[in-house]
Length: 411
Image (cartoon, rainbow, N blue to C red):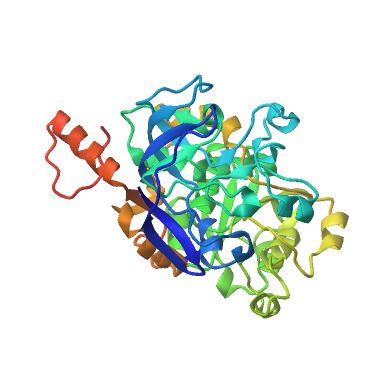
């Protein structure tokens, strides 16, 4: 089969690798029809986790497809089912899974390195380094999905695939951020980052009744999108002391602040310099601004995939202002029945985040475009495998639709 393989810093190639097989009774083999590149995948692409990667590792954590085969212990799926593949691999039985904190699963990540770094092992994640279990990802024509009853969500066949692809990770991560920050009706919130996840946080915050939402970014195209969606855009690049600036336009500060820009986001030269020479692997630059801009007793959520250590963390202001700071990978299994129902009912449409599409075989070029902010439309690409193209043609033929542009339709 064809798969996107990590070959080193800024090197991704399409290679031919063996098709996966059932190796555990709880596995499913899924034939991938559509996949995309996650912002977190850029950490691997840019070399931030090279010490946790091996040449040839299969990438990818956002994909949908059809079940081809299931192991004998899989109860909720059968061959032919259309599924959303969740990136978090959970056992369903440990204490954390029983509390629905699936990304904290005790069982599915064998990484001793993570245990050494953190004191504990977190859950495994598809296609996201040996630190997260070394599981092959789903930027491929087939994927072995462990614990398929928990890692796959059965989806209707008659829904635009882009809506389902947006539900694999982006929407669940955005909802998780709002849960961590305890966003409520009437809140004033700030979201650092106007990429797919950050904009999803902002749009879902409106759904939850937030009174005012600031969208912060440096990218002019993404700031325009935030404004078009009804947010108040703030150009971080034009305001070096962004914490002070937020306080100047929002007296009293933010009720809730959400970091969705990632550990590579820096604003001040010292942090950029420390990252460049290896003194700092994760930057506290954005977090420091967030802590300053958040009101006393407010809430902060960190979802930008911080992994290691940082300098100059403002622990004093955090403690003295009585802030609640929470972070962590999403708990998609907890949120998914609710979020998928919103899509089925027409109350939520995540397809907006896919601003263009292409064939899966061109994925290496799209990694480069994503990393350099050259994505057409500014957000995400929907990549269609040969199976997805075949499915689309068959559906169009069955419904008598003549398609000249190759674009998606709701079937």
